[in-house]
Length: 361
Ligand SMILES: [Zn+2]
Image 1 (tube, protein in one colour):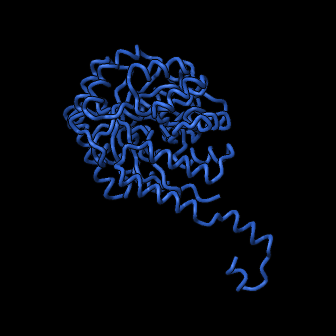
Image 2 (cartoon, rainbow, N blue to C red):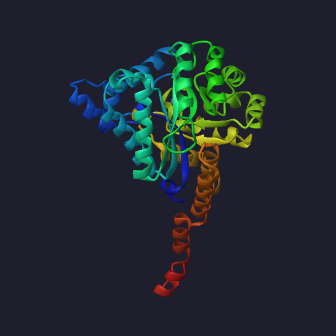
Image 3 (cartoon, rainbow, N blue to C red):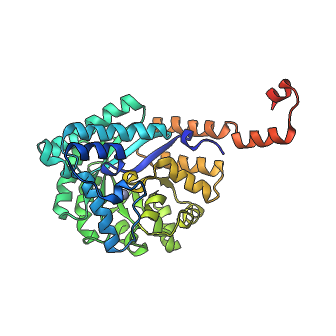
């Protein structure tokens, strides 16, 4: 039972607004004299059924938080705090999803909005040691032409280093719109050297995953957790080298699975899927990155298997080969470190009588 917050890992599924600390949200609400919904304030994670009405409640809470982000200083604060929280949880790399459209009116357009986020990501990288890169996320609730505009913007800042754009995402209600209509935006992104990272396979099942894989050419799937409902499709996704950003607490809070034990991590791993655990929206789900690994441990994964999960997150990241190699070595060191659980069990069993023996144990 090694310390999961010390396990080196990459965090590949976290939304900008959803990453906000609760105290930051409260600060912003007080400053603007905004009343926050009790669903956010009661300290319990938001739990809603996966039907449309449940999703809208989730969306309303999310929008309330987003509407409080109305200046550059707040945008920078959110990025820095996300990186600080990731650093405390052993993350070496954070790939943060942002739709700059929401903040554009306050800072002079989508280009300055993205530039602020990228600059904040570079600064956060220096200050925390966590590499922070950005995924520009288009929204299924907007017109696909908006996604093309975002894709062209994102391509101008493409890279793999901290403070660059690494991919194009597609978020919000999976059930909205016709998946193929976002094909051109993802084509622009892929041609411009960006990875395709759309959401799929959380609220909807294998049929939707198939649509997204066929139409958008993903490098990774946001969630993808329901792909395993059709084993042949999961095998196809694995063979295509598409990684899955699985967010167990999000799945449970959105009513996709009854409890953490029901999230089918085992099925995905048995099929050889490369899984990167993510927190999605810790502000609403009250569950951060390490909590996702704790859920995997509760499902019965031992430390070697948890280390392999962390390696999967690092491999699935878009970090440079040099960074990945360094972090993978650190994962090996974590696994090679003494297991505190085993040591205390051994101490109890042998009950050393002298200080010398205790030292040897
Ligand atoms: Zn998400």
